[in-house]
Length: 95
Image 1 (tube, rainbow, N blue to C red):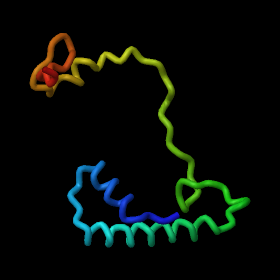
Image 2: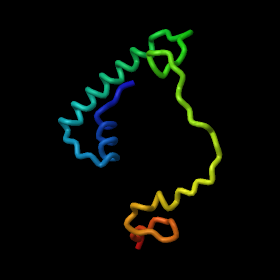
Image 3: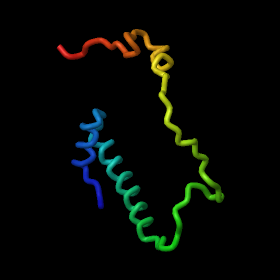
Image 4: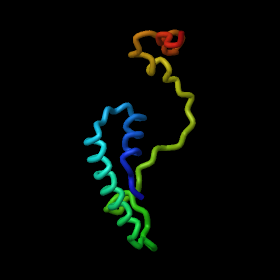
């Protein structure tokens, strides 16, 4: 897979990033080199290799799965500039 100049310009426009012709060409080259490296990784045979979360064997710490009533609404809105009945008040943005 390769990325052409038009694709870089389109992504930049969608991201609202101003990119010149020269910058777009450099970005296309860099993206293509990254994609080439990823394609090399796809060639590695990983059959029989277990997924791991760390290079050291360890068990993931897990919290107890307990149902609580919450009662955190007041704590959540404590630092908000404006609240009403534990809801955030925000300015109207639609006219």
